Image (cartoon, rainbow, N blue to C red; front, top):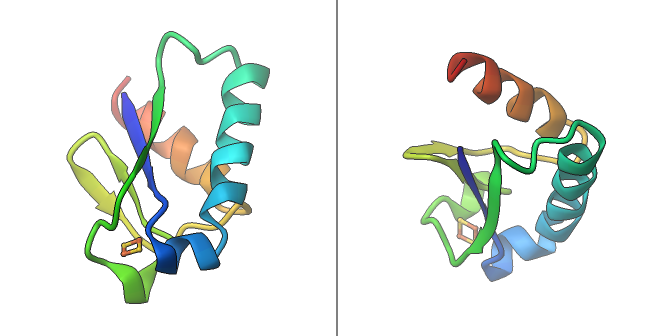
Length: 80
Ligand code: FES
């Protein structure tokens, strides 16, 4: 699964680096290195709803460091 976190200026101001840090922690804690490919992305065109991430082809808005865990686990469950 590919997760791309927007680091465009709007999402950056809303804390996208905290989201990346939290994702890195979760990936390490849960040994998801083989399942999750984490990257950063330029603006995903949803600035007013940020932070924004892309999970494979799906755009997810309203992401925070507090809800990213749930989003990650749901996406993993959906993909088996
Ligand atoms: S800066 Fe993240 S969607 Fe535009």
